[in-house]
Length: 307
Image 1: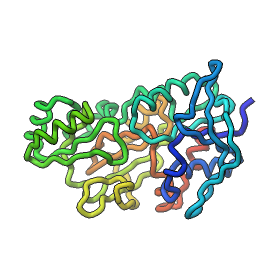
Image 2: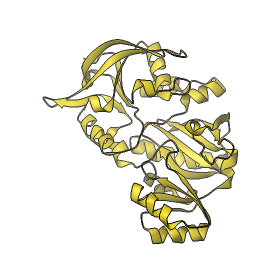
Image 3: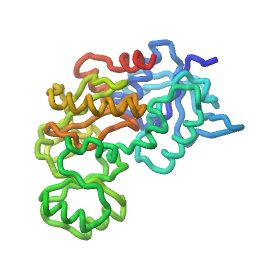
Image 4: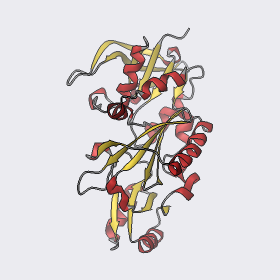
C-alpha cells in the first residue's frame, strides 16, 4: 500500500534558496495536505534486488531566513512506496541525469513528475524546433563555418549550450567574429544553439507556467543593468506581466504538445513575443516568485491537478 509520502529527487538542500525556490514551495503545499516529504540526491538513487531505492531523509520544510528545513529521520526508501516522485534536480543534463531517468523508469506504479522517459526524450532546447516558426532566427550546430555564416547574416547573436541552465555559459557575439573564442565554445559544448539577438530583452522576457497542459500564469524577468540575461539567479528582477493573445495561442500549442508527451509541469519563455527556445521541463522554476507578485498559489493547482 502506498504511504502518504512525496519523494523529491533534488540537489543538496544546502544549495536551495528558500526565498524563490519552487521545490520548497511545492513541498510546503504538500505538507499542508498532510504528506510526508522524503528528500534524496540523485547520487543516492540505486537498484537492489531489481527494486529502486533512495538513501535520503524525511524532512520538514518551513520558511525561515536560516533554518528552512529540519531533518526528521534518515531512511533508505523503496521508492514505489511513495505516492508521487518529483524530479527537481537542476541540469546540466549530463550522463548522471540520464542514468537517473533510466533507474526511475523501472518504477511502474508511482506517479513521477515529470515523466523520466519524457525528460530523457525531450531536449529542452532541441524540442523547440517543433515550434521554430514562432522563434527568432535559430541555428543548432557545432560546425564553425555554419556558425560564422549565421553571425555574418544576423550581426548580433546569442550562443547557448544545448544542455545548459540558469543563464550559465551564454555568450553574446557582436558582428566581429573571434575565431579562437568560437573554437573554445564549440570545444567545450559541442553542438550549441545560436539565435539572433532580440534587443527587446532589455524590457524583460516572459516565463509562462504550464501545469497539466494548461496555461496558469506568467512573470516577466528584467535583466539587471548592463546584462542581457533574464535569469533571476543572474540578478534579474521579476515583475508582473500579461500574456498577449499571440503568446497565448503559441503557448497553448506548446502546452498541448507537452501534455501529449507526458510533461506535466513546464516553463515556456518568450522574448518580444517570440519563443526563445527554452522550454523548461527538467526543473521548472518561478512559482514562489509568481505567488509573491500575485498572491496566487500555483502549488495548490499543481497538487490539485495531480489528484
